[in-house]
Length: 145
Image 1 (spheres, rainbow, N blue to C red):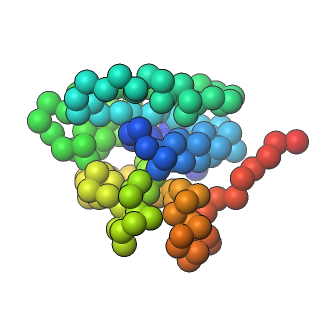
Image 2: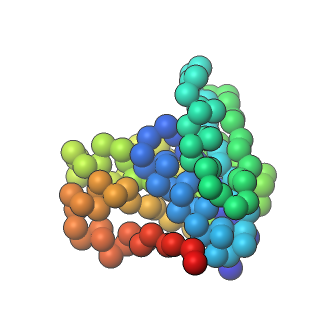
């Protein structure tokens, strides 16, 4: 059973899908969620994007903004996993995956390569529509009663 989920997020749809999926998982498993964003340059939309990602969450996730200090994003995420004792990483598909054959972009590939815990990849709705074979991996919407 997972107790702490780490979600590396950017500003794209893939990150939003991953954050939503992790929040849904946390609701079912009763685990903590931490969103981490690696600051590559001055990004003014980061706070606004995080607010949208966590709207409606029962248990508000921890949000970390981390500077890379010359490391790859995968190395920063791996280091963060160790520091917070996360036992699952949830990432989104590459935002341009609809146009390319690559489901994972270079950042996600770096995260998977450096991971020492399981990594779950969440497809976006647009990607599932364009690549129907991904439907079997997509998580159906869960509506609370």
